[in-house]
Image 1 (spheres, one colour):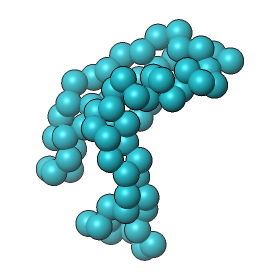
Image 2: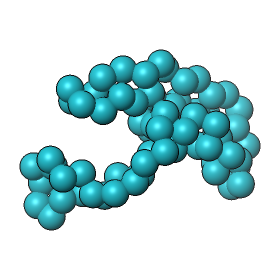
Image 3: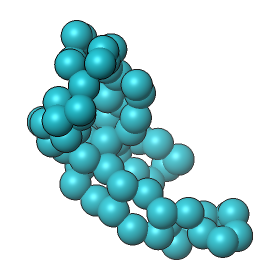
Image 4: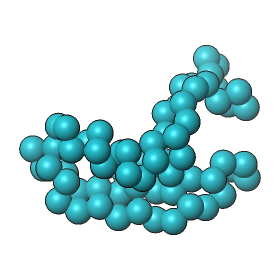
Length: 68
């Protein structure tokens, strides 16, 4: 599983060009692991450091190998 995160944020992205606008939910690096561990075994997790995405949001990439 791979998702963007690194900050605690959720809501509609107002600058979204899609219609209807999409809802995004981001988790802190520690939070995503705690959420996923409720359902899966986390075999491996790698957090790729924060970067500028789309010129405005600072996000990390949270990469995980999960088993059930």
